[in-house]
Length: 187
Image (cartoon, rainbow, N blue to C red; front, top):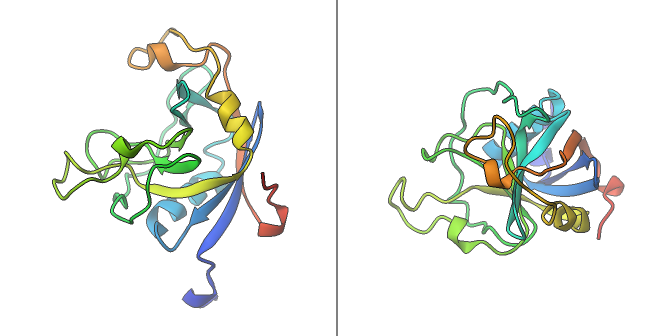
């Protein structure tokens, strides 16, 4: 069994999409719970054939929870928020999506297309200032992220609360796999 010091502070994964690959670095040291959660969903195949179901043009792309027909995938229990880890929602970072409750993140994540300081933890008031936990960053394929972030969006049947932000043509997340650092295709 590996000793804790043998676990690298950064690990890598590849998000294979219908528009190309996105290689990411995951920050185990700053966000251990969130990173482990993301990797477990990835290795369990949860992300296979899901979509980027929310595109806020030139701001962020969100995925990891819905099929192309907008059926929500079942998830494990929510995790504790690690938004107080000091990482910021800057261009190219990955963060956990959640509901109003700060400790409600499950499988959905988003990638920031631009700096989004309004998504950062801003204080100590539990719900008001909670922010969104950053746990990684894009190290290769930011051009793919930018392309996804500029697709046409519009109303879809069954997408009541996301109506204006669902891509007209589904952007498929084919799968997410952990990869070795030497496999990373850096920008």
